[in-house]
Length: 484
Image 1 (tube, rainbow, N blue to C red):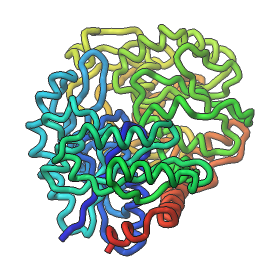
Image 2: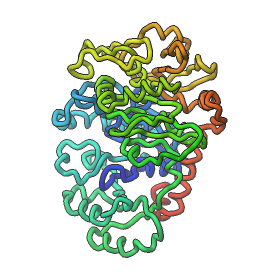
Image 3: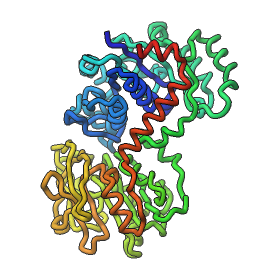
Image 4: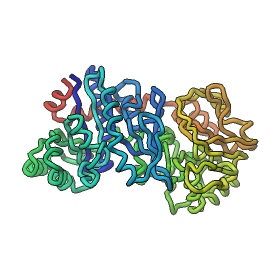
């Protein structure tokens, strides 16, 4: 029999993703075949799975932690928020349509069959499945038709461990409150809880554990400290961009405008890990720093809407000034589309705006098209002549004079564009900076030695470190029972 456990949170961003990844690595280190699963995810950070469809990048990371190939069945329902059209719905790796929030609530019960089918696929042939919930089961207004939390747990009969984030405060109230408002059926699914992100002397929370036990009867399976090693893992939720440190005074400042519908922002993580790079995320209301050597415009789930917001922030003027000063620009996917002269959307894929003027830094134009490109790709940098590995997830076709100077060669075909002076470039290839040789060549062009560390290996080491920390603090009786 395959064992299963589901981690649900008392709220969003309580650290479920990292805990699931860490537990997957613990199980793998103990010789178990383990798989992650998330019934429903809402994120514009998507990955291309090994079987060729879209899943949340968190589940891609968790499959890496489990040391097994990623699959569309690990995240059967992925919601990708767009602009006026609501969210794009990905079911078992493929686009299934679009829906606004209220419409999606009505659609959810129909998606349960796909979720349960994928769950059976994932747990076939493995020893353990670790499931991640979404949001919180305490959102009882969304309980009817739920596929993400207790709706799934009760249908699939998966026991639940509740995760509370003590760093944000009110963890006792959030645990006890969740117990109070859940139905008896849902409450019976919870076997215990984990306290996450604790700072300081854990013994100071002994009375808190006693209080939660008194109110709920639930045992505590461990108090997890603030995991420093988790900071070396790709982040799933764009809310973390609000908390990133900046202004470190390092050799090269790289500025990244935080688009309203920013997608796949973990493209920037390898740059953030470089000792001589000061990666600055420019929030709305802020200016692009005048001393930035490079501006990276990241991916976007809604290019036209983000292009309008880009101008509304005055970033278009900042970017023009940056280029006049001799600064360089790289656009990735939606950011590449924004750098051109024009973006058209004749099919209304992104909304009601049929055409919009681009930033005019590349002599290219993009036309949105219904067909979506989703694939893992082997490539080569046409600029630095080094190997690249990455992936493509995009709508639209970009053409124009600057395409005669491609930024990369993907599977033997040219992709992207480079300006005549070589200072502005764009590509549809995600994962550009994770390629160590490319990153080293890019930094060297700014007079900086870097890119020496294998980025993927550094993430793998971070997963081992998270696993070791969890082994040290989680209740060994509970952990051994789960892993036996």
